Length: 214
Image 1 (tube, rainbow, N blue to C red):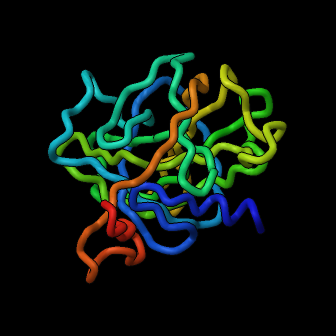
Image 2 (image 1 turned 90 degrees about the horizontal axis):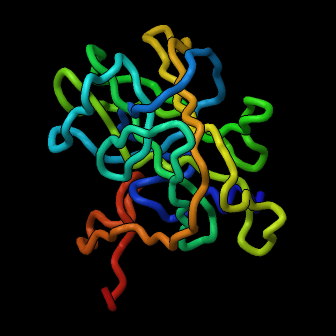
C-alpha cells in the first residue's frame, strides 16, 4: 500500500485511480504489439497550440510535458521526483486521422523482459485528443519504480527503459503499441503548478491549491 500511496505524486493534473483525463499520442521508434490491463486514470495537456511533428505517423508515442516531443533511439530523458517522493518521466501521444476520443495505456517496461517494471503500475485512461488532422496530448506521467528512502529500489542513471504507449480501438482491444528505448538521466525535483481559485483548486483532475506563500 505504501507504493500505491507514492503513485499519487502531486503532479500536473494527475489523480491516482480517480478521475478520467484527456490525452494524445507521442512519437518515436517502436514496435506494434498488443496488450491490456485494468483501467486507471490520469491527465495531461496539449492540443491546438502545439505543432505537429514532421511527417507524423498514424500513431506515435514520445515525451513532452506540454506538447508532443519525438524521441530517438537511446535518447536521454530527465527523471522527475515529485513532492511525495515518487519518480516519473513525461510521456506524450499523438495520431493522424483518428477520432478525438481514445483509450491509451502507458508506462515503462523492462527492455530485458518486455514486461512492465515491478513497482511501476501502468495507467489506462480514456482521453480526448486535441487538434485537427494531427491530434495529440502530452504531460502523462509514466511512473518509474523506486522509493526515495531505499536507493536499491531505484533505477540508476543510465538505465534503459521502454517508454510505452498502447492505443485501443473502439472495441476496447489494443490496435497499436509504441515502445521507445530511452535512457534515464539526472533526477530533477518537480512541483506542479497550483490553482489560486479556492472554488476550483483541489478538485478531482484539477490543480492543487496554492499556499498562502505562493
